[in-house]
Image (tube, rainbow, N blue to C red; front, side, top):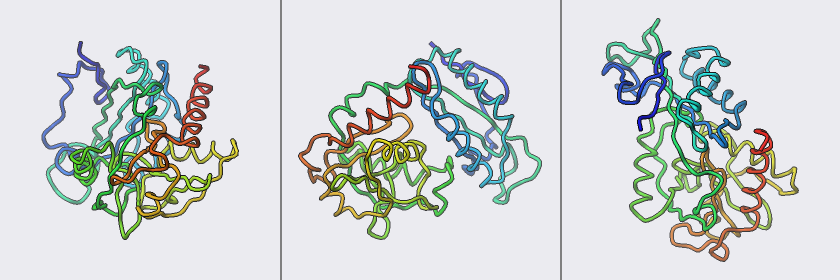
Length: 284
């Protein structure tokens, strides 16, 4: 059964959703994207998602292709049209169609598309058993705070990780872990969550933002600082977070067993807390 896709103001069957070969997103990766989780047929974490998307658009001199309220209504329609119960919504804006020049052309009509995808979020084998991570070199550009569609560096790193039999790659720059190829990175030592502070060096993960808000409410301490792979090997626990994983325990990094090689107590509690908070926001 074909999915319904939103493209430039129209809902279309996925095989009819096409853009110009001269779209700057296709030619130059001149655009930004967002992913919003969906649980029980409803979006979660809407406010921080809107704020981050607004930041990414503004950083590239792009404007919203429609008012935010209309955008949310469109996403709700996409959920309904695709009968999406659990998974996510992908939304992308590019500068539009123009001749291939490096500078930003003026007065273009942005290309705006969105689609849905299904994924198990609440029940996950990886969340129960934990995942393996390997470290890889961070070769990305300097504005990682922008959720850019230019993801080749992350793709190279992810492929390196998967080729080595890992679920995720933790990118390392100047001897310190920055973040995962598609997730935020954390370790736990002596009951304290440790994660790199926000800057242009990492994406401001929405799950990261909320985890760091929830943790102190439930008596879990947080320290925002950079950490090395060696610190990670010696950590009591490690975990990652992203839009459709929430919190996944990490049981091995570069072949080194983390803790006792099983999902840690704090990590498991954080996942429970996140799910409880998410279900509360949708009345679950």
